[in-house]
Each structure stands twice: as structure tokens, then as C-alpha cells.
Image (tube, rainbow, N blue to C red; front, side, top):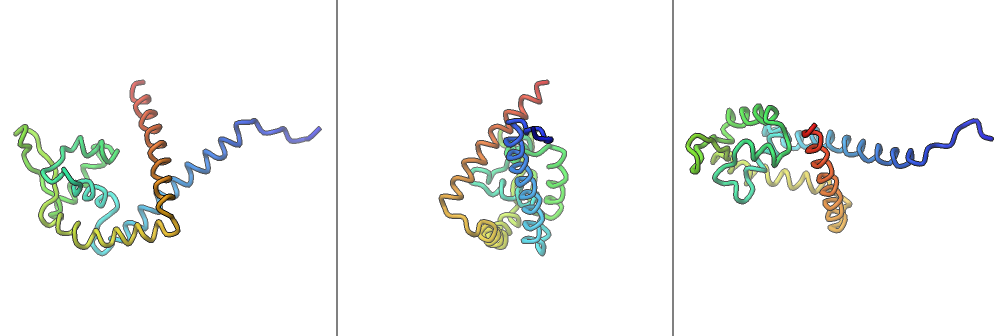
Length: 165
């Protein structure tokens, strides 16, 4: 008889899950660090990059409500408020009256923000993506998106379930 008890059957699964989530954590941290370095001379952080990118999407030209932006980016209103204030201070976004509700404000890219996105930022971001995804085939990228989407759906369900308690 062994002095060491056999591991419970689920511990291997837990170890694998732990490794996966830790890799996601590490990847997110390095993405923020190296992404910020990629745009360092523009004084753009990865959080600002995400907001500018969301506002640069097709259909967002006229602006997006803050609540919609928080849902799209999956961040809290409190976290977004500071980022928006800095982007507005730097002249990259502007707040405009909603054409559907004059009491409501929308966030949109300023002409300076659109220009920065289309010229300097897009090229740098493309180079960053290319370097970060080096060695990934198109199929690898499609599979990664598929699995990350599944994880995201599960995490959304967990988040919604926790909000009900």
C-alpha cells in the first residue's frame, strides 16, 4: 500500500482548468503590457485602444451610449468613466446629444480620434497582432476564436447567475 493517497479523479481536470485560466491571466497581463508598449509614444493604453476600437467600428460613427459601450467592452461604468475622461481631455472622443433622446449623450470619436485610428494606430495594431499571433495558422486563429467564444458565453452565464443572488 502506498503512503501517498491516490489523487481524486477530478484533480487532473482541476489542474488542467487551473493551467488554462492561469495562461489566460498571463496572456491578458502580457497583452496589456506589450500592447501599451506598442502605442507608448502615442500615449495610448490598451484600455484606451479598446474604447477607440469600439468607437471606430462600422455603425458606431454617430456615437454609442456609455451603457452600450460598457456592455460591449464588458467593463464597469466606473472603469470606463476614467478612460473616457482621458480620451476626451486628449481630444480623441466627444460627447454628443443623442438624436433619439435630447437628455442622453453619446460617445463618438472626434475627427482627431478617427484620424489617429485610421493612420497611426491601425498600422501599429496590425503589426502587434501579426507579431503576437506569429506561428498561428488561419485555422488556429479560427479555432482559438471558437473556444474563446465558448468560454466567454460560459463566463457571461456565470456573471448573470451571480448577479441574481
